[in-house]
Length: 205
Length: 205
Ligand SMILES: [Zn+2]
Ligand SMILES: [Zn+2]
Image 1 (cartoon, rainbow over the protein chains, first blue to last red):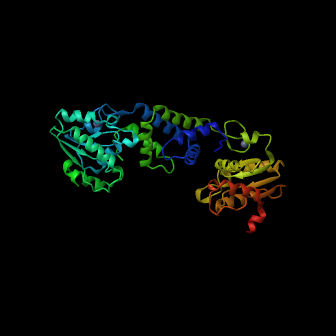
Image 2: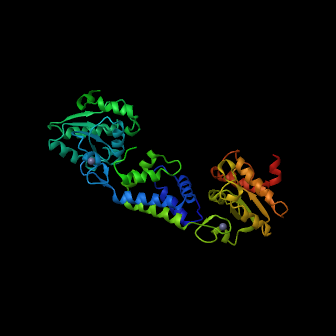
Image 3: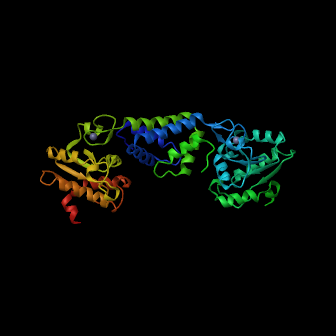
């Protein structure tokens, strides 16, 4: 692709670094911005710089937050003895959207995936284990996507918690195996939280 | 979509202003940036701000350019008596890519489309007519996308040039009617420039 402007070429190259955005799409997006009022581009640029610079993760649950603790962890009406373990913040948003869950979350930041070089030490697992060891958690709900990596992650954490007095469950599999949690409809996901099964029982199926 | 961070929400909202980028895709892109080194986001933001702030259009052909005249208009090896009329700069890039054309361009900046409220006065037509009236153009090649709006635009310009000593042609229709020029493969597009036909002849078919 030959550009008549270095500024344009540079913008297209940076835009096409984003996943799923090829050079042609990037060019279309940049040319769109050039046709809009300047303020739209400046607001986009500012918003991206700001979220990247000032982004903060909740000290307790690792959810994205503008404060030290996120709104969920700070909400006195949430049940602090019940923790829903999720892969990333999109899953927090998906479960919150169901209005079926009134406990807290723990965001692992990914799932164990030897193929991608992601081991337990790369995830927020130790802080979860510490919460359980501190004795303040009665139940963990594993709400990982029902994939092999999700199952591996659940099982790894389950083994770390052997000997501690905590109930573990997984969300009911209303979802087809292999599906990503965030694409599950609200009703199915909401019901699967309510119908959660003890983790040991899920191993037999 | 409920966000745990105003900064995140703001970035996603701005990103989802882009055409074809919904809220869910915008969230995926912003979360991707949050996982990458800060520099990637800052470079993207800078490149977008810079191209929007400093963007310049060639005073002669209206192509995007970093200087007063674009590289094509300034190239002494180009045939200044032959002008290829295109809708937007992606079409300049598409034709340049064929290496079949050694004249200059004139970028209209769109096509006449009453449905979208775009009339001749919204396009760079008057500067093209002036070039012809100045007597320095021997041939115009209409290289608009073969759509109804493209045909309307060609015909409007053609009528403005009645009585002036200029040959008008359209690129050969190797392309299926209704297709966008920029998605045409290089070979087809290159041949259609060489096989161009007098504009009057194209009206009969
Ligand atoms: Zn939190
Ligand atoms: Zn030019």
